[in-house]
Length: 301
Image 1: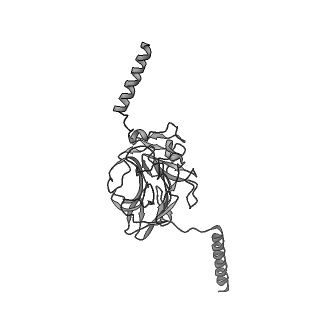
Image 2 (image 1 turned 90 degrees about the vertical axis):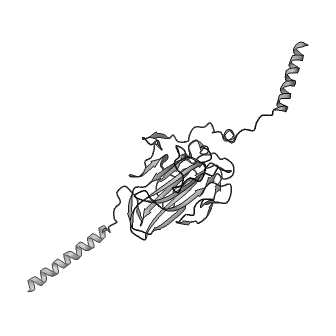
Image 3 (image 1 turned 90 degrees about the horizontal axis):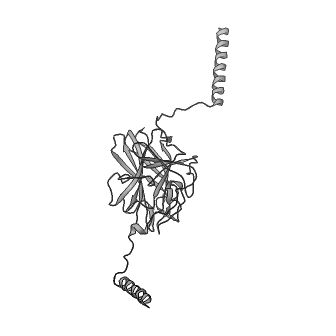
């Protein structure tokens, strides 16, 4: 009887304590706990800058990354771009670094960690077109407004033009990003809503296939075109950043970066017209005929 009474008393006091002091609501950080799953593709950290890259790929020569970057082929929700390349470049907050990835014009408020990728320096004359495609994918949503951007810089590091923005939102337009500066490039399509759902894409690491509420998904490929107004030396930089915390990553695919129709690489060259095989044959025949006529005229004289 004493044991029963003691047990009954313990239950009573426990219920009383719960009634008087109910458990606190879990914090957003606890609610947004990281899933206990392995990344779909391993990332490795290399270099003194802590750069994370996909071990199965390499960036174009002369391009530089701070954070998580790599190249990939058709993968999950991000297919090959409309230009038909066999692979594309990407940046992701998976492998991101604290304080990296915010807009070049300054932070918007609660950026945490991110990544930037810069092309090699290229020369352009006034009126030259800078063209490329991008695709934004995010596992985040519901007020955690991760974002991505592209900026044209002078070789000296001075920002010239914000080309596009993409930002997580629970609904409505994703490109251009809501609450961000107006981009200067011509975008096709000009306004892009999110294609909703948990985006399966290897560069998102352990967040691939996950979705935090409304707003997660991807944009599909969008074309960006900007006409450079002043001759000079430039480079293109893209960035992506987490917003509010470091959970539920976002990323950006990039492809077809050309200046005046010429791909950017580490050693830009001026396009020079070349003769085809048939062209060389025709030219050789014309020269031979010219030589024969000259010989005939010389003999007649």
